[in-house]
Image (tube, rainbow, N blue to C red; front, side, top):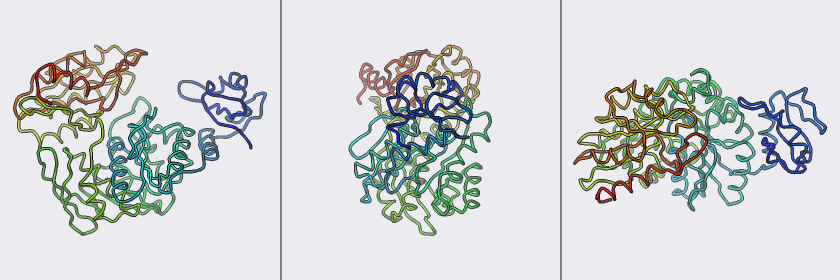
Length: 464
């Protein structure tokens, strides 16, 4: 069929476009068919039995059909496309992979939570995995810019909603699976199966699948990839293809001994934190899987720069106590974050964190328990309360760590955390990372953890 465009948002319909009337969890797109037709929609894509005054394209799976129509509209994509899934580590891994590709002679891009990044800089995106039309338009634009290698995040939401199902992948990766998004996924298994769609439905048979096998879910994904006929590469502490043999923490870096297919290689990673090493190893594996020589990949990793909001060093006190900002917003993410800074910290660890509203509430006390276990001082503050009562959220968090301090105003909490720092200490501010706003009610207030840290350090008379 001939059509001028495609959208699932009736407000974006222009004459000649196809309107995808897709039933959702909050709204049913079929309710907006009259509005779309009035705006000039030439056809409707929806479930069988849908009636309209324009032709209806019927599909038992309109989300999947929408993805394939989007690919028809924007067919071009970079020659090498890699997708990365998992609860934690996706953003860092795809950006690290981009950096390795770029340093080994390829024109590369990464995109997801942090936006679209090329060697020229970063532009924002609205979702980790964009709407199918936005995704294919992005891929076509990258291709037109001469990008030959692209790495993208694959969220469980995006996979379950078939946003990616028409892309052509060269390789795929998996980092880990821990508690998150249980406001959307009814069970852990549903969450896991959504992640597994990347390897079952999208990755062509025989393609490389690079899997971190440190946890049970990673091992299950690797076994599933074997059964699917993929070229499975197991990496991490228990990796058979790339194994971390030893890590020696330095002040703001780490020396890593890797065993890559029985060959020992040394990597000086200029980033702190064990989880950074896991993400770097995952990226090295994906680089090798897409044709980069192992030695070249490791050498490129030695020049890596960190990702905004991922154990990002923002400043330090006059006693040289560092202040880090990180995106950790799950129990596992906070646990790994605090365990990662411990080897680099001679004194006490102070953590400031909160939990978001209108999201999985069961993780709130669990995150607090992780904070209490690994930090010496815990300050509970607000994150993005959204429509919930901020004080009620904090109360739920505090049940997991009754000894924590409670300071609702996030800027004040950050300032108080800095005041507590002495020689050898460090402050970790977790939960928002790269975000530039705080969602309170239906408003987004401009807010940056990094800006608040710099402001507080200056006002308190610290060198930065």
